[in-house]
Image 1 (tube, rainbow over the protein chains, first blue to last red):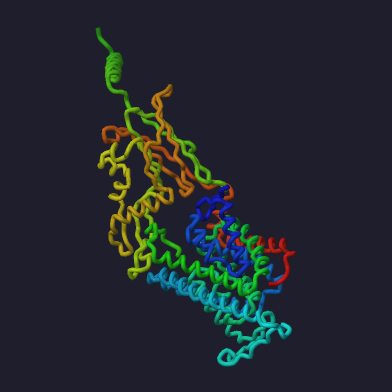
Image 2 (tube, one colour):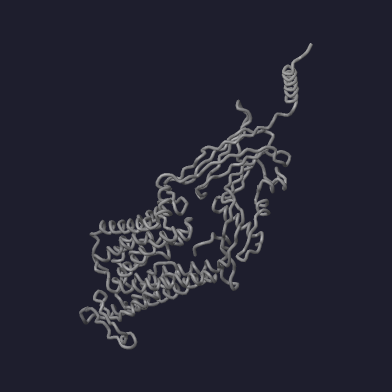
Length: 312
Length: 264
């Protein structure tokens, strides 16, 4: 019933860890998020040291996102072209973010910045998605009450004007049905990459709203493309963490991925039964719940006033 | 009658020995404390979740006993929390605890403070007060930190199950083998691999009157040892293996669920 983890130097109940993997994998398949912002605190709660929890989580996300990407690929939900642009931006942003953290660690302000970035970003993203989804659901209700006079056709892409349309390298992304300058996903990918590196997560919960609201991609393509991008980011993170910091616990990752790969598939199947707005509102509630948890952690006195040096 | 030098020495030795024998019979029984730990080696295998350490030996029944299981002292770096701007709790600085054991488990037959004087507790580093007095705590600037941080340190370690002071856990018997004791210590899985010291002290009238010591080792074995070694010695290979197995597992499950096609 127990398994000893050779790098974390602790023993865990494997049913508990597989269960955590299953739950977070389900959310991954459902919303297209890696789940790092949920899994890392959960692992710390079961006694895994923070640095090992974060690094090993990236390893298990490789499996969950590979499983999720595979499933979404078959469904035709992965916009590879958009994913590659976002990924290039994400790598650049990640490198910048790591340097920012290094600089802040030297000055002692890293912890505060990390926590505040979490609160501000999660709070903004969660609130915006929540309000927007409620608004969209109300609109749909009104529309469905009115008599249908026209056959439902795919809405043509709105003609863009202004700054974004004036940017060079305009590209049509067939899978998403949108036209953007290549600079837009590159810039947004970089922006998310910087924040993801500062926050120590894959960035899925930031990338999803960016794709939905800024790149105007359809929700089902967003989930598949986000998983595609997360897969590659976490492959890089896993290797670097194992190579540079020796913080990847292979056994812990195996237990987590055993749960998460099945969870991701269940999440994908479940996601098909929900509308885009329902998915968005569920993700918004999840993000807001995590925000409230972090705020409480910040304002309430911790039960222990000491922690081992190292890690966030 | 002339006696040879050798004969004189032999007789003198015999008389001395007889005198010492008589003295020994009239003196109180000599204390002979012994201490054995079983097992001497705790293997950390894949299903390891701590172990039971049995410590046995012989003691004088009139003496109280103190058993200390600890690791060699070393410096431990910690971060401490503080309130920032009167509103939020953040890690606000570092503390270094000089020369503290990583593991410190003490079992006594009675309350430690009642059976041993303060001086002796200090000498043998028994009890948190004695440890606190001997431990230097420095902040980020190398300045001495307040005593309250030592109390926080022991609370932290107790929560990790690797610091504990408890009483009344010895079983003592008088049998064919003399006066014996036995104590079973629940060895915490949180204690890292290494060599640990077992110190048994016999205490009477507030003083340590006898002591015995032994050691045991907690050691990684099998696949746990192999993976730990690989993670350090062949980090690149370990990283690639972790990625490839995750990719294979994810893709394999993806293939298993192949029939679940469709679209949102």
